[in-house]
Amino acid sequence: MQLLIYRLVYPVLWFISKLPWSLFYIFSTCIYFFVYYIIGYRKKAVSENLTLVFPEKTKSEINSIRKAFYKHMCDMFLEMIKSISITDDELLKRFKITNIETLKDLESKNKSIVVLMAHYASYEWSTVTQLLGNYHTVGIYKRVKNKYFDQLAHRIRQRYGARLIPTHEAMKEITKDQLNGKLCSYGMISDQSPRIKNATYWTDFMDIKVPTFLGAEVLAKRLDMSVIYLQVEKVKRGHYQANLIPITENAKNCEDFYITKTYLGLLEKQIRRAPEYYLWTHRRWKHRNTTPPIGATID
Image (cartoon, rainbow, N blue to C red):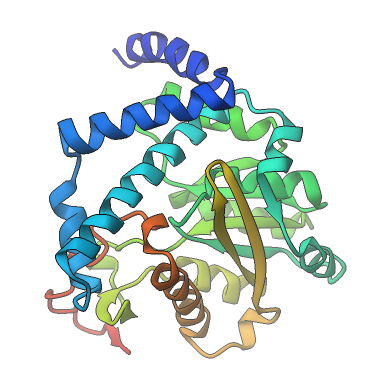
């Protein structure tokens, strides 16, 4: 069944990816109207999230942010599909890194790095770093249930020489890279909600106390990697620019939770500045009223 679904869907995805940019975004607008006005995909969850984190905003302001978010979400989803056939030149024109010298400087220190990212603006095209630096780009990701679409995700990224590691294999694979002397940049999206059984650290995010993933910090401290934040901003439709913000070059010497708190603080500033580019469909604050497990750290 998985293979049948893949064979039916992939030709459609390939066709969409080949659309000229003008038609591509007209199609995205059509998808927006269908998703927002007809299906109403997770509209209630988005409204609840926005109202929760922006209690000072009026209903009209919340609705305005919500509409802008859905337009961006449809663009971003289709841009992921565009990755099937986008050329290197097109990618470099549409996803610019403003301070690539920061990456070059870290490369000269002969240490691997953790690149913290978020569900903000565009994370899909961040593989452009593979075209600009000498690090081997590695994405830590949650495996897709359909193995054929999972293989497609691998093929797309391998076009730029990047590779993917499933979350549950991250420690083993990264340790192996370190032992083999392989310098890599490990991209990790760490802004979602962990399962309660794994919720060992709780802190404020958008002024709400919630559990937070610590995996990136634990890896960086244990293997003594540098840590940077890839701060992506949307310039205009289909165009992004990213700034590499150093968090630490000596993770093992950082105080516990410093890396995680700094990362969340940087992301929060982005969200408050332009909230429509954050992924509001996820239930990031669903555990806010849950009693933390025994032994959890509450910051």
